Image 1 (spheres, rainbow, N blue to C red):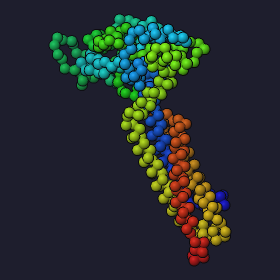
Image 2 (cartoon, rainbow, N blue to C red; image 1 turned 90 degrees about the horizontal axis):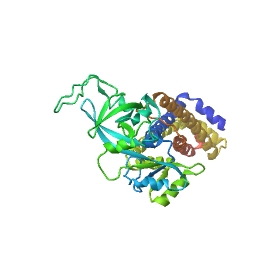
Image 3 (cartoon, rainbow, N blue to C red; image 1 turned 135 degrees about the vertical axis):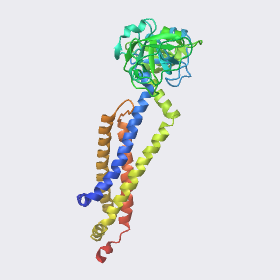
Image 4 (tube, one colour; image 1 turned 45 degrees about the horizontal axis):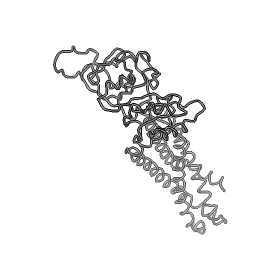
Length: 397
């Protein structure tokens, strides 16, 4: 009977493909939206991802995520170094600044200061310049995306004259490169390198420099140490060392993975991205349910005479229900496969910094559950129609 149900379904290609199309649109919308959401939210902890050398991040106990540090006293690093299981502990500064470009325009910056001696935390994938030049007077490294976008400079800069001059915002520009200058807090910085970084959740330029220089150009305040980067000693689990730092110093210590998760879930809780994404996913499910249920229901009505014949020959409601369920599963599985495959192909070829795409196992699982809901609703509506069917009606036609 189940094989007969599949043959009935495939015998009407137009109706069958209609049901599959409904499931396909549902699957594609959900898979693509969730994959774009995953790609976008992965950027929320890009700073952490770009510093793989650190096993543990130590911060003020009130800090919830990486983009909002609170200054630690200078003694914090020495206290962390005194904890058993710490191989090394180095400073990291992160702070927002404003830069005046050679065009006269102002741009917000995220300034990251890394340890002067080891340069741990500085980007390694440089497209221009040298990492060692970061130690030169006023040396900074900028991210490639910003150098080619927000930090572009005039192709023909105007002469510097005394007094105020209007910004060159309409002139022809070129990407910021090695040798160009930025003015930050009235201090002149020189670009010594351009690096390729992980795309950020917040679109603002990122500038790397040494820790001492970052402190030098920052506005005056008492504590400027944002984080202490820690490497666990060989043979020590980072989670155990982090708990030891918590207990010994009273500071908050999180492993690389834990702090990335903290930042991820902070943005999930506090931004409207999840609500908007949930609305779009709900629309996808509604489209799948409405289109697939309607077309499978119409298919069932068109084949009422066959179902009436089966019931007249002794088929039970359970048998009829299993036939309709198999039809729904065939349509659902076909639509699911086509939807996931199409989303993967489009996501792979269209993926850019502006269009992130990461297909995860959780996305496939959630989409599968959504398709299962579509199949169940479609099958139940069609089965209820057949259950109420009078077997004697076959003799009246």
